[in-house]
Image 1 (cartoon, rainbow, N blue to C red):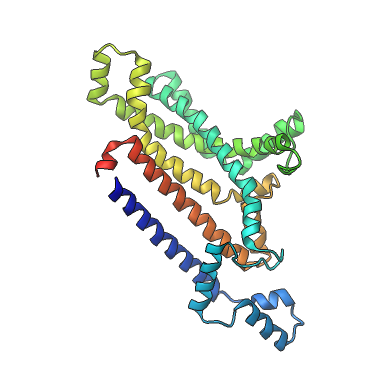
Image 2 (cartoon, rainbow, N blue to C red; image 1 turned 45 degrees about the horizontal axis):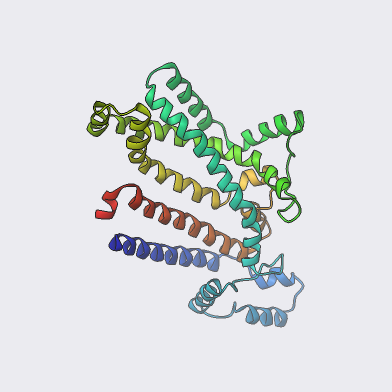
Length: 314
């Protein structure tokens, strides 16, 4: 178990280093001068030189990279050009929207996919299975932004049950903020539930054909016990893999859906930063998104060891 943990931690550190170096290198060689963006086109060469020295832009590549990494570890990273505040504070404030949105979307996805996938596996090639597969095919074909617009037309415009967009803030209204995330989270969750349902079905079908399942049934165990105690646990390993990837993807920013619902999350922030050429914001959010995906998959890898003992022995 300790070797398994040490191996995954080593891979995690190496991946984070490669990603941070790649992102910093790409933005370092891009044309454009942050000092010129801050001061404008009318700034004098002396003023530009002073600001570049103040921002450390006149230092060599590795010096700038080292200072940036040190700032990330101490929580004192780059400052946003347009907001004139630390990017770290911007990410924390926007994560208060994107984080709950991603978690709610995954809750919707799991609540929908696991029962449907298990039901479809138990009723293979029957009308119920065909209906579930048709639902998943429809979910895979519908773009999430289009589903989000349909939900606005139905639940906000026609029925008036939810607002069409915006986010009041957790400190202003907790229930109002939670309600503002339901529609976008459902739009994201339904699309991901389609993938998880098909994967759960195929994984359960494979497990239910195993010899130990036949043995459990031969012992006279109830079908519910056979499916949910002996079958589901072993079928969850591939499901957890995709679940981790999807959660990391959601944390990495649902840019389109946040713009559809006008949510002040990480996706909308990076979209605005790209349009405004706020490179420090783009750089640190991209690194944060990549780190979020890697960390989620690291946690999923550790979960394997608890779900399947073969990973611990390996």
